[in-house]
Amino acid sequence: MKTFTAKWETLCRRFLPVSNDADIWRYSREPAPSDPLQGWKLHVSATLLTANTVLERLGPLLTDLQVLFKAPRSLEELSRINAGVYYGYSQVGKCFTIYPATDDDSVALAERIDRLLRSLPGPTIPFDSRYSRESPVFYRYGAFKPQRLEVQNGAVAKAIRDPSGNLVIDRRDGPAPSWVSNPFPETSSDNERQTSETNFRVVRALNQRGKGGVYLAIHFVEPMPRICILKEGRRFGETAFDGRDGRWRIRRERKALVSLAQHGVRVPEVLSCFEANDHYYLAIEYIDGQTLEKFLERRKRRLPLTQTLDFIRQVATILERIHSAGWVWRDCKPANLILAAGRQLRPVDFEGSCRIGDRNPIGWGTQQYVPRLTRKGGRVAHPSVDLYALGVIAYYLITGHFPSERNPVPVQDLRRNVPVEIQTLISKLLSDDSQMCPTASEVVGFTSKVGFALGSGQYRER
View (spheres, rainbow, N blue to C red):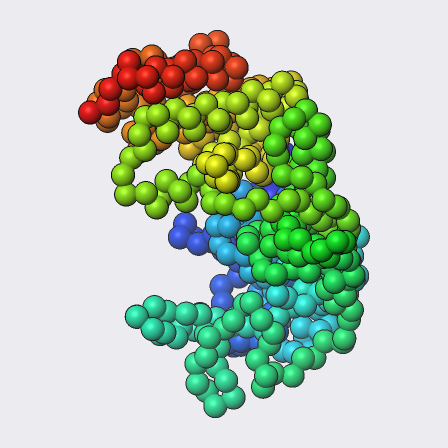
């Protein structure tokens, strides 16, 4: 990783010398008055593993031609761009943006760059057109220089000018404007093989990011169709330094779900899996209900301690079974717990799960629920990661607040009459010392015992 980062910095100093602290981009030169306001721009996609090679090949060509282009100031920023979360889904894959002077230049450059880089993989850029099959070169019509249009409530949007000179919104999630003529040769679409060739039909997208989408879909099977969740793992999507991409992660999730189900964990049932457009799709059971996170957000009052203890016990029981099956969940949080019929919690989202003892787990999890010492990944996968997350959930259920990382406010300062045994349990779960952490089985037994005492009136909350 350090080698890749150092090389990127060296190449940027050579080919992209113009930068400022307020911008995530580095530029090949300062913009010139003669540069066009808008036109057909080229995008070249790259992964963390291929970005240096692309710049080594692309830099000399564009520098000799004095064509303006830009790239992220660091590989960390490229990782953020390819995630599609920090800067928007439409930005996924846009490692290099090139601003040719004319339409003819755009077409000629696309052909040269395609020949230069065809063997190098990169993620698909949403909403752009791909120059040729398997090419990392994409194109779209848009603004070259900043143009702004005021929209409703004083908001400002990026804009381009129509043939009459009027500013209109520069849309990045659709085709080119109707008045623009496409100079590029027609190529086969990335979408030529879709899930329509299968017995699945997508109803709507629930989530989209670089590694893949999550969709609500209908599975057409006998004796009658059923609603399901369709998870997509994209080839080269959010490729990490270890080479694992979105497709790898969804394959791993399927393996985890099958194994956990065999050990009696009530994970979503795996219905089917298939490939389309070199992406991997996993169809799983749709669980009717709402997430524990949504349930807590909608409540106006805190949960009674008896209900809180029941939820903690249920989560601990889920973790006990996961760990007994030899896995670590690594994404235990209220957003991944579905409150189904009978107030029973069902776990979902096992994309980041791995075997206990795995010495090379990918960095995973939501920061709030991950111990500080394991956030960078690379450590041996251990159940204590899940138990720390359980401690955060327990603290939040009881107090309505999240614990601060280093010095969490004692539970008793935020809610009176919480049994001291529960306070001690939460402290152990949140401890940096994994040796102090109880097992999930111990938490199940303990919360069952205290929950019974609460129900029988041995503890009374005021």
